[in-house]
Amino acid sequence: MIAVELFKLVRRPRTWLTIGMICALPLLVAIFIAVTHIAPAPGSGSAFLSAVLNEGQLYPAAALALVLPVFLPVSVAVMAGDSIAGEASAGTLRYLLARPVGRTRLLVAKLVSVTVFTLISVIAVTVTAYATGVLILGPSRAAAVGFAPGTSGSIGTGAGGAPTAGLQSGASITSLSGAPLTFLELIERVLGAMAFITVSMLGVAAIALFLSTLTDSALGAALGALAVLVASEVLVTLGAASAVQPYLPTRYWLAWIDFFRQPIFWPDIQRGFAIQAVYVVVFLAAAWANFATKDVTR
Amino acid sequence: MIKTENLTKRFGRVEAVHEVNLDVREGDRYGLLGPNGSGKTTLVRMLLGLVYATSGSISVLGAQVPRHVGRVLPQIGAIIEEPGAYPHLSGRANLRLFDAAGSQGSRRTRRRRVDEALEEVGLAGIDRRPVRAYSLGMRQRLGLAAALVRRPRLLILDEPTNGLDPRGIKDMRDLLTRLNADGVTIFLSSHLLTEVSALCTRIGVLDSGRLVLQDQLAHLEQPTGRVLVATDDPERAVASLDGLVERRDGAELLVKSDDAAALNARLVEAGVPVRSLAAQRRTLEEIVLDVTGSGSDEFGVAGAEGSATTAAEVES
Image (cartoon, rainbow over all chains, first blue to last red):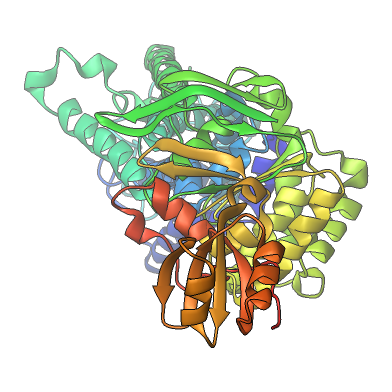
């Protein structure tokens, strides 16, 4: 059944359209920056963007930061929200179940399919962003990234000599220790960030998948999951809600930036992984409990 | 093949199916009749393990449903209301995909089985287009092909002729009759009396969730013990049949008699010019309307075929 779901995923035009759009945003941003040479001021704008004019190789990280707030969660919520509800409203769910495909098996296959979609999206963004960064953004001046340990250097020494150190809130690659990253380390850190973001998206997917078993409306399920995320974002910035903040799904979404500190700053990354694991387990269990006992009347 | 005991399903406070004891036997062409909303679809979905019963038990092909439904579903082909298919894929790709789902369809024989199923429903030539471009009738044929891909022992078809034109209905009827002759048991639900009377050997009638009738069609359509006589001289006929005439309608008489041939001989002897004479049978329409209460006006009786008389037409 997993093979069937993956076949459906790759044969569906929507999959590639969505991934194309996710990749197009960083590309568009890169073109603007490359043409105008105006990068956001350090500490403002999306993470890492202020540094990419000098460090094209950092662009994958910047690109992930660009698609993380909206594009990625929206696509994942739409995909996961569609998984059961979409089959129900298309009239194919009952035929799959009458084949028979066990309900648990179908749910697992859907989860695998959404996971693969998330992975493909994250990889596609990273790869296109790397190519974009290297090709059209500033050539690496080997100041920080590269094999020059010990060079004084903040990668954020700006184009006009203006100091632009710092990626976001002082989180420059070298800001914590002053030590630069080797290319190998950079790859390691990017992979870590990709893994963290994928797991964060699985939390979204689990919520949307659960809602997808509740309703026959794919749109309703996707919007429901997004509503949860928006509410979480609101509460994360609300001082009065500080008591619940550690448990909100989006609380540690940006913790992957800590992968780019030297050395890696683990606590928030670990908490982020843990909280997403809890969301995934709880909502998948709820989805299973609901779907396995549900009357399929569509 | 299918047996239910006191099968009941409630959705909230609405009772969709009430204590139904269905009995479908091997080799049957069973037609479940009932107006829209009488619970047919809910009943069919319960047989397939899609909807869970509130109470009562179901046995299909000897296995308890829904507990062991996974074991028997591979031997069942089903159409459940409208056909379902992935619109961006071709009909063939859809069949292959559905066959691959659930892992019971052997990969080795898949191509051949898919080809045969498409051939059987008359879609062999046009299966490369995406299903999006199919007409409703073609989708219905594809749905039937999907039901046939696994070469089932039992076909459970819910309103299979929806959207088919008269040609398509005839094709489907011929196909189902042929499959039945090869040993496939057929259970179909419909609100169209003509469809059921043309195809089925056994019927059940569902009315507001209750199975109000279940019997062999031939048995139900047995002569009623009346003979319809048309004659140019009704006066003489009435006189010669003293007391046996139950109703007179112009030149047509309804005569109480079990033996049409003897009645004919008697009339001829009396010098009555008999134009036609036939044992009276009840039509499926009359049978169904008789056992269903209100709401039976929803039956699709338009175009119901057959007159009150069938057998033993006699020329005078």
